[in-house]
Length: 174
Image 1 (cartoon, rainbow, N blue to C red):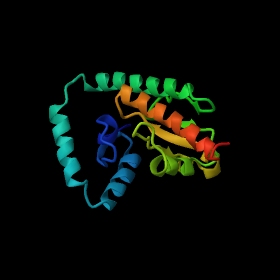
Image 2: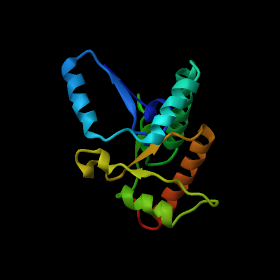
Image 3: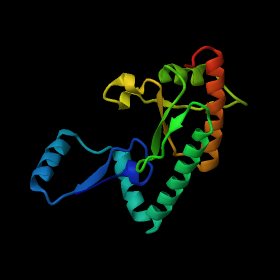
């Protein structure tokens, strides 16, 4: 079975259009019924799909793979330099989960957006509790997508580190 989507293949976050190939008749039938429950793929995404399929070079996937490996390495390396942060390189995907030295990642994320900036910048992170079966397991965890170029990722994580220091000084750390 092969499952593919624009959002993963072409980094079109949120694009909800893709394909599935299977020889398994039961899987095909079940997927077909699910697909019928949707009215249609969004028009703009259909145009994007047609454009990407016509326009992308044959070496796109290899280049994209190398770029994401570089971004992942940059993110993990930068995070590993921040005291109290635990992050591991994912084997797939373009995001990672990082455990922070905070008791509430959602409160920290809000602090970063509303109460903090470093040299005129802040870093948006997604609290990751919702990615866990038991939310409390991810209470101090954030999700970081490495969709920015390597230098921007490193800068965003430097700002994150400064934000953690400010947050702890405010009394929000562990």
